[in-house]
Amino acid sequence: KPHQFWETQPIPNINDMDSLKPGPIQEGVLEDVRKDPYNLISKFEWCNIDLRNDEQAQQVYALLKENYVEDDDNMFRFDYSIDFLRWALLPPGQYPDWIVGVKVNQKLVGFITGIPVTLNIENQQTKIKMTEINFLCVHKKIRANRLAPVLIKEITRRVHIKNMWQAVYTAGIVVPTPISQTRYYHRSLNAKKLIEVGFSSLSARQTISRQQKLYKLPEETKTQGLRSMKKKDVAQVTKLLNEYLKKFKLYFKYTEDEVKHWFIPRKDVISTYVVEKEQGIITDFLSFYNLPSQVIKNPKYTHLKAAYSYYNVATQTPIVQLMYDALILAKNEGYDVFNCLDIMENEKFLKELMFCPGDGQLNYYLYNWKLESNMLKPEEIGIVLV
Ligand SMILES: COc1cccc(CC(=N)NC(=O)c2cccnc2OC2CCNCC2)c1
Image (cartoon, rainbow, N blue to C red; front, side, top):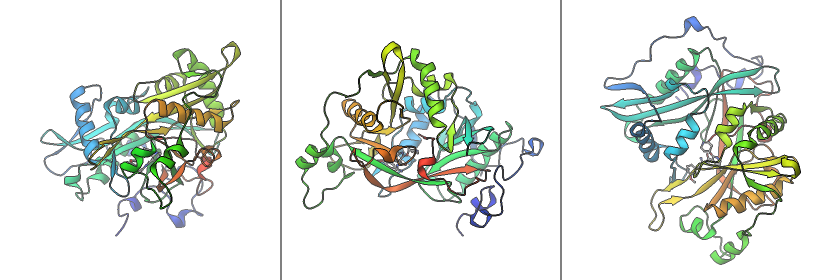
């Protein structure tokens, strides 16, 4: 019986589509929220993970490295670094009990996380304080214990207890009920390596050297005034980003503190470049994050270095040119491939910059919210999850 768990959750199913009115599906009642953690099977224990602690961060790293998301052909597995996890999970306003682990004899076997976000949905007047859920992971050796539903219920309880009643999350799989189904695209930067690790394949008429020529990039970027973002840019970038995102139906509202956290460059984690014109005016910016994948078995390579498009705001520079510079910068930083989704305005540059469609999709979900329009088109999505 598929979706045994999901049918019990406040998420529209197909026949709710016309009956449910837009907005919260269930009204949250704070006093009804269970005060104690959900029961776990014996020997399993809840623990809050402090990612600032090196040992605990190392345990999370090791669990994800071996047991987190793989591609459809099980050739690659995400390999989030500790510095990346600290960036992704310790934003301003973070709650320590939203980094949730399950241990057996001190060994971490389960994990799920939430971070606080302020989401605008379909240009509602109200912004909604909610949680962004990520990194749901159960050790391969203890799957089919129904631990994942308990991890989801427990973090839901910990969100409810803070009087928050909605969540946003993504998944490669389809469970009830996506609000948008986006496709991922990749642009080759190191054609030879992508072929050698099996990420790309050659058709009969293609050769490695022809692929290398096809995807070759200049050393220098084109856009005048393009430079790495600095702290002094935070105020302008915040204004630019918040204004730009209003064109989408789903987007976060960012404070300056949040922009500082999410966009100030961090080596091997996040790269952000701004376009500075006369009098120090910032007119555009581009950003991409570092998410390597372990190559599960390959004689020559252990990792695929992948840059993932984050937020790109083009108000003066043509978006094709801005993203062409993003490719050049990523190539110069040593990446093998540049990945993005067909969300926001990305389809404006995908073809021209020679992105190829990936073989899967990334589904967006909202918990306890009925949209006015049942589904959103990818270009209406203005949020990027890591
Ligand atoms: C190449 O190595 C991979 C290792 C694991 C999974 C996949 C395929 C995949 N599932 N890709 C994506 O989900 C994806 C493709 C393009 C852009 N962002 C993405 O996912 C992001 C956002 C959601 N959390 C994971 C990272 C590829």
